[in-house]
Structures are given as C-alpha cells and as structure tokens.
Image (cartoon, rainbow, N blue to C red; front, side, top):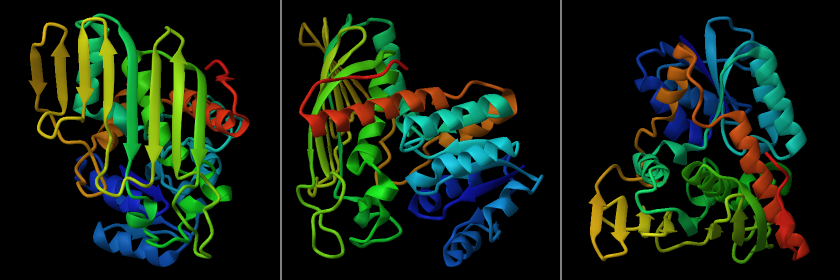
Length: 345
C-alpha cells in the first residue's frame, strides 16, 4: 500500500518516513507540505512522490494510510478529513489544541471505522512495556508515588526551522509550548504504565529562558512543574523543560510498596529494579529515542499491523483525548494557582 505524509518537518524526516520506508507493506510514500521544497526534499531522500495539495493526497485511492505530521493547530483539520476520506491515520501528538477539536477527530474515527492511532510513542518502548508488565503483576506491590521528567535544549535545536522563529514558540500554532511538546508524552505514559487516570493536578509554568526572533520571551511556556493525583490514589510529580542544556532527560521513577522501578535513569540499564531488601535487578533493553539518537520507534510498524489485522491501537484517539485533558488542566492550574480536577475521560 502507499502511505501519505502531511507535513515534511523533522518528525516526518527522522521518524515517519524512515519507518515507512523500512516497512515491507509500504510500496511508496507520497509527501505534502505547504512549503513545496520540503516535500520535494523528502521525496528525493526516500524515493517517493509529491502532491501539491492535501486534497490530492486524500483523494488518491491508492493511498491507504496517512501520517498527520502537521503543526498542532492543523491536526483536527487534516486528521478528520483523512478519516472521512477513508484513510487510516497516524496523528502526531497532541491530538489537537482543544477538547472539542479532539472530539471531532474521535467522532470521525467512529464514523469512518478506520484506524486512528496517535503518536504517543513512549508507550512503545520496551522498557516502558516491561515496566507496565511488572506493575500489572504487582511484583513490587502497588505503586504509591512517582516522578517523571522530559527535557532537552529546545525545538529550535532539532526542528526543521532551527531558529527562534520556530512555530513551537507561537501560541496560535503550538498552543501549549513545552507542555504539549514534551509534557503530554509523560502524562500519557503515566496513564499507560499505571493503567490509571490523572484526576487532580496543580502546576507552575513560565517562559524562563527562551526568546523569540524579536528578543522577547516566547508566548508559551518553556518550563512546567506539576503535582498530581490519580484515580487510584497515586501521588506524583513531573517536570518538563526546553532548557535542559547539558543533556536530555527522559526518566521516570516509580516508588512501590516493595521497591523502586527506575526507567531510563541508569546510563547502562534502561530499567532498574531496587527491591526493599536491597537486591537490584537490571534490564538492558533498547536505548530510548532522543534527538541525537534516531532509531526505529516501532510506531509505524504497529500502525500498519493495526491496519492489516484490525488490532486495537496501543494509543487510541480516546487515549490521546484523556492526555490532552490533563495538559489543559495542568496549564489551567498554573494560570489560576489552583488545584484543577480533570474532566473524566
């Protein structure tokens, strides 16, 4: 089958296109970008073809699957249209900027009965999947508290636009700043690891360091810290940052009744168990995706498997809607200085 990609920025270049190219079920990739040169460049790199409009992509009956790699404010437009044109869609996160727009996508999926998967790729790493297995087996008892973080030096260092004019710094386009770029990954991960929902949250946020092309503080947050409670009663904290200039940090620590789970915390072991009696168990799985270490995430393969077999996506539109609600609640908490109760998923 053919795959179409909407939006030819860094996420398409480094993640989606290479993984489609490696997938045995994909015969060709068709690229669209509002900047024709970007589409031409990726088509040349991956031996694909180009269309000059989204409609041309959606109306091509030979294209069965679509990756929506557009900027955040366009997801609900392109993903909804693609689903209603009978395409299976892998949408980048966040699913949208508002709950109403996310609901529009979810309803389009129901109406079309096509696969909708959202690229919450932390659900796919072997370390996170192994940690979820350990938690479900209660090998260390119940999870009591957790802390998680995700930070790097900022999208202007890895995005296709390597300058302070990047769309990630524009409120009307990115919406949430670092909260939607990095934070939503880890909030979604907590839902996945614990098979639980974040129900209450408080937070602080700010544009502490990043400046726009005019030398003024950016319109969105570059740092957020939050405290939260889950439906099952777990307590946790999180920090998300575009100003981790020394090295990227993508770690999560879970404190359980009978020990500790450390994920992507040790330099040599992707998963480390420290039991209450002092015994340590180390797992060498795979290194996590970073901006400097681009490897196959398994996301495209999982998406195509769902298309071919009817298997339920590991990160569905409903899952993504739940994570979006937490991000919105987190930013509301930061703006109001109050504890916000998250709307039920």
